Amino acid sequence: MIIYIGADHRGFDLKESLKKYLNEAGYEVADFGATKKDETDDYVDYAIKVASEISKGSSIGRGILLCKSGVGMDVVANKFRNVRCSLCFSPDQAILARNDDDANILVLPSGFLDEVRAKQIVSVWLNTKFDHKENHSRRIKKIEELEQKITNYFE
Image (tube, rainbow, N blue to C red; front, side, top):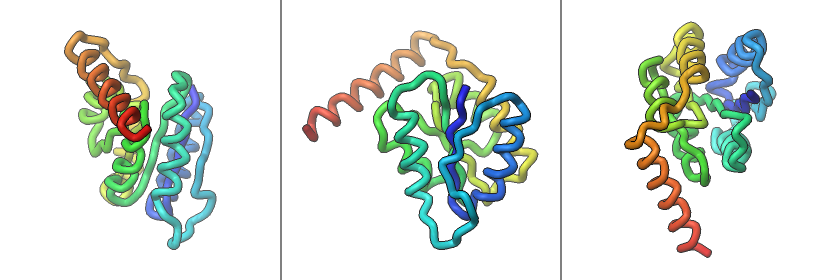
């Protein structure tokens, strides 16, 4: 599985740590930036890069985004079709994001997590499968139908 990862200057240090952690765990990591700490960068740019890749519908990858609060990254990523992005502060929340909602992008609030907690969240998120229960699948289908209606409305 490929992990597409991106972070602004506030998430940069944690991103670099997670890249190493993911590589050691056997994942291929595609770093979509930032490539250096630049306090003038904008989280929007990195969220667009990762969400664009996930939006293609490829089942071989997932995304991880990091910024201070996580909110901005989450807002931007969820603008993209086929993206189900979840801002997670705890491993339990990450399990539900995957199990119930089939989240394909994880957002980590770097200003509220230490490295150990972030690794725990990433680990359970990557290792939890979508359960395909009828109620969860039905909700995903409704999200997909809404995305299609919105697309048709603006065409």
